[in-house]
Image (tube, rainbow, N blue to C red; front, side):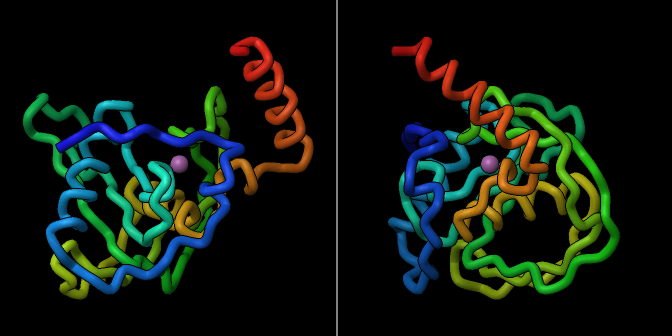
Amino acid sequence: MALRTIITYPHPVLRQEAELVTVFDQELKNLVMDMAETMYHAPGVGLAANQIGIARQVVVVDRSPAEPAENTRTYITLVNPVISEGVGRVTGEEGCLSVIDCYTTVVRFRKIHVTAQDVEGNPLEFDAEDRYARIIQHEVDHLRGTLFIDRLSPLKRTLYKRKLKKILQEQQ
Ligand code: NI
């Protein structure tokens, strides 16, 4: 396993539509393991493959209990995920490993129906609610080239872009 570099906005790969996965081989499993390691190292609760520069439809989502011991963290892998239904609207705080220094509230479906494949290519179909549903929606957005800042009001987005410009200038 290896840590991968997390790519940050405004890098263009984050805007790419990720490609469907059709081959379920060892390379895919290695990618998923690297993604999980990179996600937990960050630390984060979800990661999409394009966040490490690979525009393929793969995400990992943390499924650990609220206060897990170090070695009890678990995650789920969703390959080619599709959100086929969404109900209810809830506002909640989000951040993104690819969007530095931005934590803000975003409106999402409260409950979703998800179809996907696992890392072996087996079909998955399930309902997700609340925090789990929010993370999945955020990660599936990544695969479509959408970032959570796209879902903010134009004013909030402009303010963030201004702030980011300053941060990037200071880093130079
Ligand atoms: Ni994100």
